[in-house]
Image (cartoon, rainbow, N blue to C red):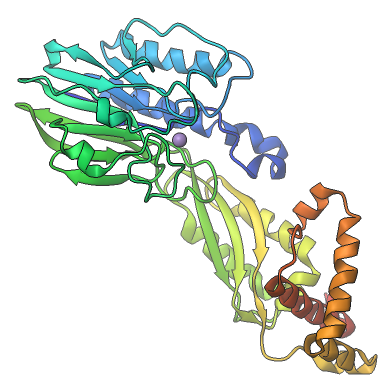
Length: 413
Ligand SMILES: [Mn+2]
């Protein structure tokens, strides 16, 4: 007997950050969750698995129309035509109370109810599945505690959407201890909710497969589902199968050896090439780091830098998209003060860094100016709140920028 365990499909999740930046490409990118789901269906059919388990969060949010639901039922029907059964529970994202539209599932699909945990027997496969859906988003009680006792002589699977003991950085829904699960007497716990792949125990198996497709830069690396082979009522093999169509990476590009924006370009191209993973599309957050003589140039010529980043992305192998560009470089040594001295800015800037009253005045002025900006602009420039550290780094950037401009740096090419 073989089954697939998947969770957190989040179909039609908007792929935060990529939509707005990529105009024409937005549609491809937003299809990533669908493509990943389709990959899983194709593997299930090709490998002739017996059963597919989905541990909640099939949908990212309430459907805006029926197309999301139709896409899902089409995949389920294809499984049905291949003789593959499906069991699923709803999670916090697709709890009964959150999805207002409804489609009847194909006949090969069993959805567990949300009132109480129940058991579904598939005796021809020698399997008993125990599960319960989320009635609403926030489920505070330990659902696992009331899961039924295992059925003797069958392979017992617990299907559950849970934060487990809350150590894995997700909202604490249907919390439970690992010992609650292990003590239940089941053979395999098919969990969902934590988007990272985690094998919490192997006797019995307690597994979070992770989500099928990363949705933002904090969901990096390979994503997919888990394939489980059972022989004579015992787990023989547990394998992770990648399914993601778009892979998120956080690219730190060290430009400490570059003195100009142009010298930074080969560093970017090199980092892109290293990030490419087979035929997966890449979505990258690009972060320039290092103490660099190009610091001032990067800040002053940000618009060109962003365009060069996009241009190099278009040249990279495969599909390479940029989510966001962050300039986190520091100046290398002291900024070129010759230009500053010429207009007597050096003493002023020194005073701003050293004199708390001067600095406080400047900060008030800056905060006042920010208050006049529309909120979406404040957010866009990342200045919703200016802490001490942020203020000091803004001041240092302003100094580097002025030095660069006064030295005629932006007229050099
Ligand atoms: Mn989820």
